[in-house]
Image (cartoon, rainbow, N blue to C red):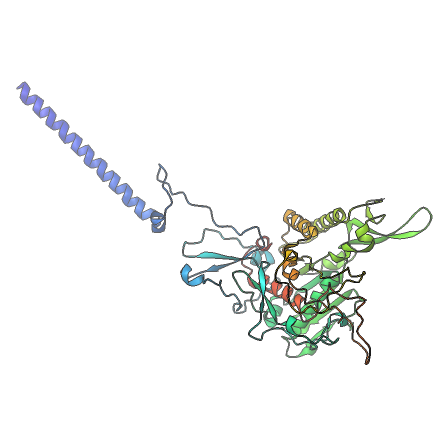
Length: 477
């Protein structure tokens, strides 16, 4: 009997173990079936590891890069189709879906961030619009308007009308690495600024760009009389404020002269003599006009390189103090911080869009603008050399200031883009000659640009920023 009871006890224990094992196996099977249902198939197939508690370690959502980049998502196409070796062609803008801040705040259009990580079949293509090369236009699309066709070009920039005969400098287009700029569409641009004020604020380089924009937009108007300066002013270098109205779009394109963005003034010394000063901790008086704009394009730079500004003796004022001597770069840093503070305190990013266009290269040989420097006879861009990589310290300061601002600013870093183009300046063709008058080579303009010409590409970059507007402006720096 003892043996029989022992055998029975062993049998019962064996059945209990079997039942327990079966229950554990069933529970484990149910768990994995539940895992298959709840976890996305792409996560199970991916190399992402599972932790000991079987929670999926997902990587964080992709964020727009801090650098000066624009992103376009290749949706509904495999990566192999969307990413050709030469980069995606973004040259055709989407069908018009105008950006109208009056109806939709800028923040709602430009500041949208992705709410979730994009699915794996969507891949981001990043394109730095300011890193690229100049390519010959083989399709006959450039220049974007004919020389002599635009009545808004200052005489000093109208090179063909002033006697320049070579046309090669007009046949280049800027090609960013990895993508194409959207083709400039003046009608679409005007739709995007319908009801708004676009304002260029800065020195004569910004007037150069302002005139280019007027010419580009005039091309889109069937009736040219529907565009005019509101007070009847003709464009001349002596006038510092212009407002051009586009009647059918109820918008304006304006220029406000501000050489330094901070305040120019005079100071009377103890002997009763007055001298000019630059008040680097006060914003320029024209800032009252800036507040009225919806899209602002700023620049300053060239005036900091010559004369009393460069020497910095008894010229820079901060508070009540005039510095006996202050380095121009340090003064520039203080001035840009003053500008940045004004932007943060006066601009509502939900209503306004801010651009800062960087320094454009001058190409003087054998001297400067006031010491016999020349650039005549240049017909092709620079191909190689250290000059292409040169980068002014002032632009490093601009980048630092912009990165500290609370209000987003699009930094148009055109310095390298313009470093190439020694062939695009007015040179000796900055003045229309009377019959029989000979060209003078004594003083040449190797700073500004012929129109049509390089400033047209700057405005193409503004258009690209509006067309490819999916991301927050900070991702455009």
